[in-house]
Amino acid sequence: MAPLISLPVSLEKTRVDRETGQECFILKYTGEDLAENLSLREKLFQEYGFELPQFDDEAGPEAYLHQVERLTARKPRWKVKRQMTIALLSFTKMLLVRDIDPKNWPNATNGASALMDHAIVRMVFEGVPNDGGGASAVAAEYQIDGHALQNLPLTYDADSSQHSALIDALSGKNLVVEGPPGTGKSQTITNLIAAVVAEGKTVLFVSEKLAALEVVQKRLKQAGLEHFCLELHSNKTQKKHVLEELEKRRNAQFAPPQGLSAKLKTLEERRQQLAAYADLLNGVHGNACGLTVHQVLWRAERYRQACRGWAATQEIYVADGPSSDEAAFQSRYDTLSRMAGQYREIGGYGAEHPYWGLFIEDLLPGTDLQIERVLKQFLPKFQAMATAVDNAPAFLQSGPFRVSASTASALLNVLTAITPANEGEMAHEMLPQIFATDDPQGQRAQATLSSFQEKVDKVTGLRSYVDGRLLAPESLGETDRARALQLETTLDGLRLLAST
Image (cartoon, rainbow, N blue to C red):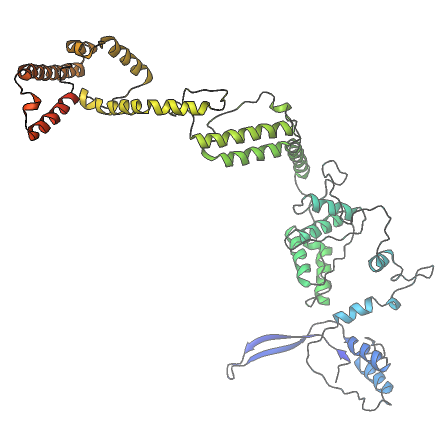
């Protein structure tokens, strides 16, 4: 069985029966017009060549049922039953089929079909012939500032691509706006509807998905344009609701906004300031490399991030920087890269580096080997000096002993002046003259030297005393001879044996 006529009703929950605990509902007529079963009409026509009569609201359901009975009287097993059944029915798609039926469209005065011969319909199904110019199918973005349509009444933000799409649409061009989710398509549609409504035109917005309609309607409501929106086709639309919306719109009154001119003037000033700032950032200034200010700033920031902590170690001023082109910049960049590599290999640059003071401009082949031989020759002396410096605090009974180049040179000159050519002629009593009389550390050093001199004099006296009293080596036994030779070696190491 299939219904011939549908009566729109709704089930409304009223209460819960206290005795049975069951919920109670009311079957209520929605007020919508009665409608025939469009799907059944199309099925009977396609499969059986049978065409149902047209349903007339004024004649009523009974007259329509009698018509169907007369037409199906000779059809075996076809019967019209008078019964009512609650069901979920939707003829939305069949309404679309009826809308695109060419027979339901009037012909123009020249006999052309208003649907099939319409320019936009033919363009959708046939496409646009290629003019041979190689034009891109993707529309180019306009320079918004200075454009005739730069001051569109936008209800939401729009970037340059969205604004360009609005300019094409308002200019009468047919276009397709595409993009992944979240790129602002519904926002662009909202701006387009608002701009067209501002021109006093009517917009028909259709969508395959109800969610898209609801998103745009919500945005228009948030922008204060809900009075200009009328929902016509959805599963919630009712004739009564449509009439109420029309009544509400007819009775709506709108007061002119206060201070709009001043706000528009301020908006234009801010727009010009931002445009000037954008032009400055996107312009080429002060360089011959063709870089915009934006590119220069970001390139400098990338280098600064790469330099990290030592970015402020050295500031380099390049006098001809503004006139240097990209090739000159790359050449200097390569030079600095090589210097940086050498710096990492050397391990530093400054007075603390062992090679500080060695400034060789031309390092010829073999020079490095000569430097290596000199360093190996003086290495023991450097090590002895380092040992002496380490022992100086204990000898002088002072704090840490630091020797700079200047103090070492002065000390070396003093020691050279007081050192005799012959070690035997050392005047120990002259050593205290190195220190000032009011120097506490000098006084302690003088006491140490005096004690040391006394010990040296005592050893010298003892050596003179025993010099003629020792037996000859050949008169000693093997054990005593070995011990005497060991003692001689020790004294010789202390430089306490008389030279012969």
